Length: 161
Image (cartoon, rainbow, N blue to C red; front, side, top):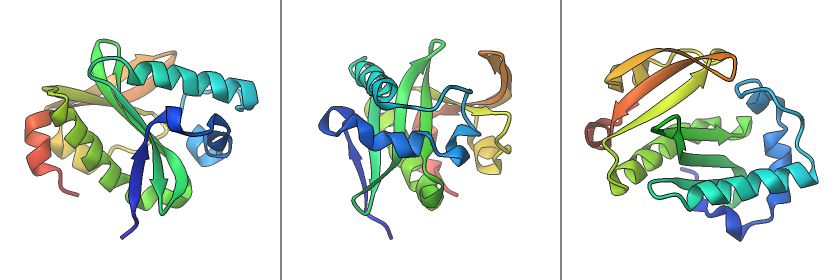
C-alpha cells in the first residue's frame, strides 16, 4: 500500500502544483480555466491557504510515496461544506483512501453533512449513490453537476468501496 501524506499548502512551494494542475486528465473534469503559470498558481495556492483558515475547512496537498500527486479539501461552497479531491491520473488508485480521510476530517470538524459536486464529464458513482442521503443535477458557473449529499456520522462508519 502506498504511503499517503497530507501537507498544509503553506509548507510547500506553489510551483510544485503547476504540472498537476495543468494535467489534461484533471482539467477535463474541472471548470474551464487557463493553464496555470507561476503567478496564477501562486494566487491559487494563496486562495487555498485562505480557505484552509476558515472554520470547518481543511485544504491539504496530497503526497503519495513522497511525491506530490494532488490536493483535497473540505471547503465552503454555496452554503455547504464540499469535498474536493483532485489527483493526478497516475494516482487515481488512491482516491478511495483520500475520500475516507476527508470523511474522517468531516467527522472531526463536526459536520453533519457534506456535499460532492461532480462535473458532467464524470460518471455517476454507484458507491456515492448508495451512500448519499440525496443526489440531484445542479448547475454552477454555467456547467452541469451531479451533487451528492452525504451524512457524515453515517459515512465514517460505512465508507466502503
